[in-house]
Every structure is written in structure tokens, then in C-alpha cells.
Image (cartoon, one colour):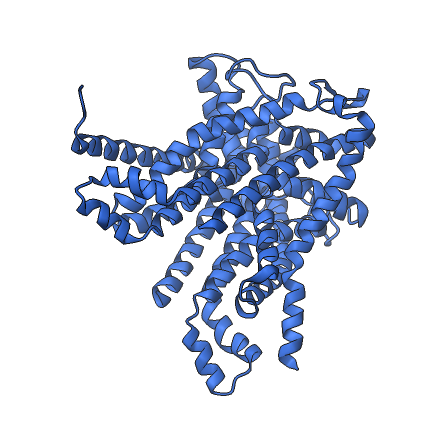
Length: 277
Length: 279
């Protein structure tokens, strides 16, 4: 009897995560979707964003988000994969044990601190040595690239680690060098884990808000070069939510809806990939 | 045609990997040292214990420290029982199957959700619909949902790694399932579960986007769960972005980084102790 009650109570508790997700989905959509239809999809996907005058175009922000996310991947993926490969294949157990928590510490640093470092160090550096106003696609990509490192390193690391030792031994026994083993055996074997890490890193980059607000410049136009300022979907929400009312607020929830859909799609892909292995 | 020997490629690849790993570590060290170098001299007893004056230009950060503690504590009190309960269900009561897949997918989606989405949700649901206003309550509840997946995942791993023999011995001595879980499995998995809780605390403390729209940014000392408050991360964001006071911003960032370093260190030690015992 006691065990039965416990089982059912625990089942209910276990569904809280799902319930929370459903509540979030419901409220974001309920607040955001009506505006998309009220404004019309043509208006919603135009480039004119002036929500107090009935213009709700979010195209330039979508382009902005995609640009900084792509930039972040260009920086984060090679760095992150290198760390994961170096740790699993080229370093001793002691180095591994000490370096992995250090890299994971990067995930613990608050995003506002990254943004701050961006303003104080990176933005002036770009302005003086590369050009443009400093607040730019480039600055955002570099900071986001660093921020997604822990995601990429720890998931790729785990997937490289579970490749059976016999694969390595077999390849080395055939006379391959360690590097040949990495590129021809280990990376293909750990492929789905590595792709998952990149997809989840992408999700982090697209969803990051506070750091991007501080360094992207937030100008409302499609950037022509990586030195131009840019505004993302997330920064628009965070910049305008506190003073928005009526349709304007609903437009921000519509931005949230788009972001939500992107994140869920990325998560579904990641879940599918992980299950296949 | 000219062809590089595999041995040479190996050496080049090794050097490049070493250099890139070094760069990653260097970035982390740089961030921490840079904040410390500029902020450590701002730290003093009065900075930590004085109320904030003139929007943060003068005075200390006591209200933000209290606010951070209350919001974080509240979120942990809510999220820990739910997270550990979910983990117990997932490990002890299901063997794969649809229910498990649904719950796991839910937890994974929550884990990957950007904090601004939690901010939007908390704002419309807790602050406006449930009329809790900008308060410790709204902020704490929003953060509780946000850190739930961290606690579920870590507790799940910890409970999974309790050797099955422990359970079997308990059953063979006549212990029921629930007794076995409470008296044998949970105590054994405790360090691992605590690691999850501590990592959750870390996430809550460093969060900005989700709390600024739910707990608000009041600089007054909170008097009840319905008071609006400003956490350290939010205070730092406002100081830095509005350029109110750079020295105070550095000081607040230093406090934040010290807390985060401590939390990660404790979590790492606990996990380590746990792992070396059961693997």
C-alpha cells in the first residue's frame, strides 16, 4: 500500500518538468501567436520594426540572430572540438581530470560577466585595431563562441570517451598514427555525439541574451559587414519588455514564440541523434 | 606530388590541438584575473554590509546579497524535492518506455531553453496572471523551473550509480521498495544529489534575464516574499550597462566570481568523492 502511494506520488512529481514545459509553451504561444495573425505574416516577417506604429517586422533580428550564431559556431566548434580531442586522446588521466572541470567552469561564469568583458576589452580592441564602432557581429560572435565552448567540449568529450578502446587499438595496430586514428576512426564513430554538441551549442548561442545586449550594438538594420552593429531576437525582447504594453508586448512574445520554436526543433534533432547511438 | 608524412601531420595536429586547448584555458584565466585585478580593491567589509546608495554609485551591495540569497534559497527549496522525486521515479520505477521518454524529453527541452524564455513566461504567468508582481516569489518560482533539469539529471546519474547489490541486500532482508529507497539508495547517492543542487544554486545565482523580469530590480531591503528585489547579477548588469559606477561594477563582479568559483569547487570535490567511492 505504502509503496503504491509512493509510486503514484513520484509519477505525478516526475511529470512536473513536462507540465512546466507545457505551461511555458501555452503562455508564450497564447501571448504571441494572435499578434502574428493580427499584424499579418507579411508585416511580421518584414524588416520594419516599429511596434508602437503597428510595424512588427522581425526579419532583421532573425538575420542578426543567425549571423551571430553562425559566427559563434565558427569560433566555438574548432576550439571546443580541439579541447575535447586533446583531452580524450592526447593527454594523461591526471591532465584530463584537472582540465575538464576548469573548462566546465566557463559554463558557470554569469553571462553578464562575459558581456562586461566584451564591453571593456573586446569592443575597444575591435574599434581601434580592426575598425567600425566595435559593438558588432564580430564582438558578439567571439564572446558567444567562448560561451558555447563548455557545451561543445563536454558533450563531444563524453561521446569520444565511449568509443570502445578496441577501435583505437585496432587502428594503431594497423600502423595508423594517433592523428589518423582520430580523423578516420574516432570522429566518425563519435559523429552523432559531436553533432549533438554542436546543435546544443547553437541553441545556447541563439538564446543568449544579456551578453549579446551588451556588445552587439542593437542597431535595427541588417548588418552589411561583420563590423556592423546587430540586433538579435533575444535582445529585442529583453530591451523592450519592461516598458512595452498592448500589441507591443504581444509582439515581443511573438519574438519569443519564434525563438521557442527554433529551440524545440534543435532539441528534437539532438534527441533523435542521441537516441540512435 | 609532394606528400606530407603521416608522422609530420601527427606532430602538426598535436601542436595545433595543444595550442587551441591552451587558448581556451587562457581565456578563462584571463576573465577571472581581469575581474579580480580591477575589483579586489573594492572589496571591504562595508561594501558587503552597507545598503546601496544613489542607485549604486555609493554604498555597498547588502540588499543585492540578501536578494540573491532569498531568491536562490526559495528556488532551491521548490526545485530540490521535485527534481529528486522525478529522478527517483525515473531510475527506480521505470524501465525505459514511453513515460520515461516523455519525461526525459521534457527535462531536456527545459535544459536547452534560453533564460529569456523563462523570463517571458515568469513575467506573464507569475507576475501578471497570478498577480504575484515583481517579487522574490515570482523570481524564485521562475528560477526553480529553470534549474529543475539540472537537479533531475544529476540526481538521476547519482541514483543510477548506486550498486544494485545494495538494493538486493535490502530486499533480501525484507525491506520494501520505498524503505530501500529512503534508507539505502538516497543516503548512498546523497553526495551526487548534493552536487546537482549546488550546480543549480550556481545557475540561479548567475542568472540575469530570467530574474530581471520576475524579481524586478528594487534596491530596498526585502521585507516579505512579495517584495521586489535585485540580485547581484542584475545589480552588476545595471551598474555596467548604465555606466553608473565602474569600480562598484568590478567589485560586484568580483563577489559574483568568488561565489561561482567556490560553488564549482565544492561541487567538483563532492562529485569526486562520490565517483572514487563507486567506480
